[in-house]
Length: 469
Ligand SMILES: [Zn+2]
Image 1 (cartoon, protein in one colour):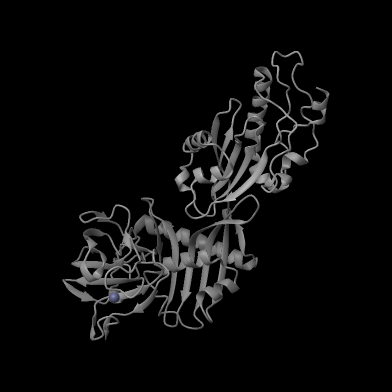
Image 2: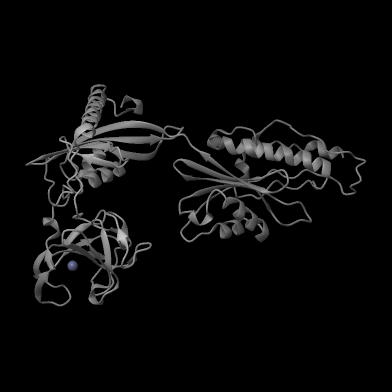
């Protein structure tokens, strides 16, 4: 038994600077292991031997557990124990990391680490209680702790697995004292900060934004806010100005975890200036309003997809496949295959099926004798079929190249009283105009936003705590 003194076990409670974000797991794991050890001392069902700790190449060399100097347990059990087999210490668990790649399933990943099928099934069952394993996405980084077995056992055991599910959520599955798996969820506190940026567009909006340190995500949000009113393909000219006031969510380390909503945006075009304020209506709906409290939302979106480029406009043109000149009854938007296509407005789906040269095709009937149609789709959005009611911006399909088409694009048509019209010409506002008490509330909110922006600019700060506004 004297050789046992050479071994040290340290519990993974030790703090490791690189992993401090995972402190909450260590707490859980520490508790679980301490139960485990005391449990095993009583039951004496653990076998210990002088084996090499872990496998090289999976990161155990960097394990925080190996670095700890604290000898928490230096000798084991009672030599007169009924158990005949010599007791040795388990090697420390191995630390490993794995980044989910396209097509990976948790089952396959655990198999890569030699975790047995039965154990894997139990892990998945436990995890499913807080997080559906099929929601693992490429880029999710799993941190695993794996216990190597002692001969004659060969199957490795999982001690814990944890990952950041999204900017706000950490998920872990840990083995408890009885060897069962327990899933845990930790909601991260995100700090909300305000950020302001402005610029002059010389080459492109993205370039101007990048020059001012505005994240691309915030610019995309801004384009969405303006999408009812401004055509970023055609309306933007050199030396147009923009300003953007938005939220940033940062995690405990101070890094930006998420870009929050646009609070205010201003676009100064050559002939007009558009200013929009975010405002929450009494009913709870959030919308953007101009200075006078008019909603910018339009009856129909003029661009029912994101990040698209107009590849062919409305009107007479030479057909790329048929070769002769004919009327192009819609607008073509070129965008990568799979880009979501939205319902341009509220309405009822009339057709959602394969439709001759249109390929996969959706047509929506709206109010006021308007219809919109979407062609060459790769496939249909979840639950999209004829007869159902859809709201503006619901995903009805994805950009593809089905039917008579030369490459991935959306062919978008607007039909008014059974005649094709130019989608760019449809500018019917939804007509929401704030009035009475609601308008008073809006004016107070607008003032607050204006004031905090002035403060931010005065301090020459790029961001400030959210309670400023
Ligand atoms: Zn077309």
